[in-house]
Image 1: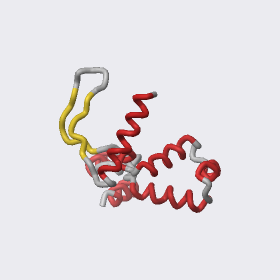
Image 2: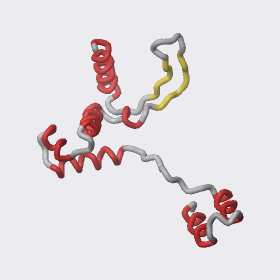
Image 3: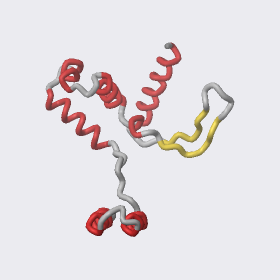
Length: 128
């Protein structure tokens, strides 16, 4: 627990020093092994949020997304919670979970008869 507290305070100090400016991690070391990797590593999206927003996201996850519970935890109204979620979400890049297939794949599926011409046209237009 003491090591975890030190890690949190180290992270808070780093956040204070960088004042929200982007940073690049240049060395990663596996804690239980004598292995280190050097290069330019971008921090994960959630780590790039300021400390207050990170706490807010963790609280939201712990409340299982219950805005009612968030209202109680933070002592603010529903619109305030929604506004903050919207602001944080606007800073995050979402991963497309159903990306459009590449052009060649659409044409191959059409050729094999797996999709209709109308579906192929729709898929191809989505690639633009």
